[in-house]
Amino acid sequence: MLTLKEAPFVKADMLIRRPVAEVFEAFVDPAITTKFWFTKSTGRLETGKRVRWDWEMYGVFADVDVEAVEPNRRIRIEWGSDGDMTEVEWTFTPRTGDETFVTVTNTGFKGDGDSIVGQVIDSTGGFTMVLCALKALLEHNVVLTVVADKAPDAHVTR
Image (cartoon, rainbow, N blue to C red; front, side, top):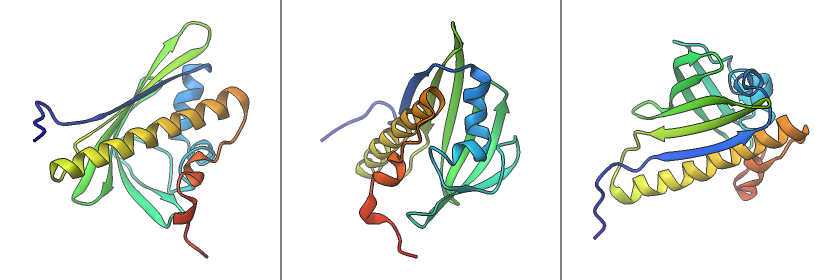
């Protein structure tokens, strides 16, 4: 039997060779974010606002409660479906030479042990793909379709 001393959580991080303001804006402005992550949003991330993110190819969405937006430093949200929300926080650390180190943490998973571990594994992979897609977009102006291509057999038909 597996015994844990602390609740599992997600941590994904990546160096993006672009200025912190540009990297930060890519997450708060859905006109940019839709190029590397979700396909539709009801608005910009602003403290106290609720937005909805859609992944139209999968027919799924997440409600996003924006808890904190500190320009060029941090974003904190709660997301998911009502009653099953987790917390996600992005931190943006400027580095030398117009580089930014982005760290994403996701906490607050609910369910039994097996369910929580599965959610953490899925979220770790998801946020890693998002950061890689962001890196390709901002550093090389390449739109990777990794989110859509992760599960092509799960696409909904229109």
